[in-house]
Every structure is written in structure tokens, then in C-alpha cells.
Amino acid sequence: MRYHEGKKRVVPIDMGVGELSPPYVLRIFRQFGFSDEEIENLLR
Image 1: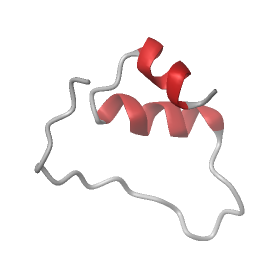
Image 2: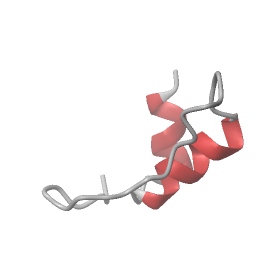
Image 3: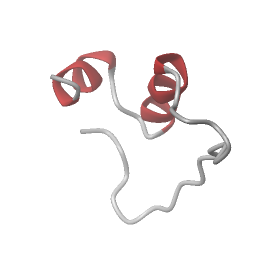
């Protein structure tokens, strides 16, 4: 994986929503440096 271990990432999350939208979750994974293929494998 391409994410950097030991580095902290800040991801804003609206705590007032009941659930996170799929596009928002994908954006979070991409901020961590995951490829589309890695994201797909994680979500299986």
C-alpha cells in the first residue's frame, strides 16, 4: 500500500449525519493514498 505509516491524517467528518456517502468515503480513502484497486479490495 502507498499510505505512509506513522503519519497522521485529519479527515473532517460531519457528526450530524447518519451515514457517510459513498463518494465521501472514496475521497477519504484516496486522501490516504489508496488506489482504486486497493479500495475495491478493502470493500469486498
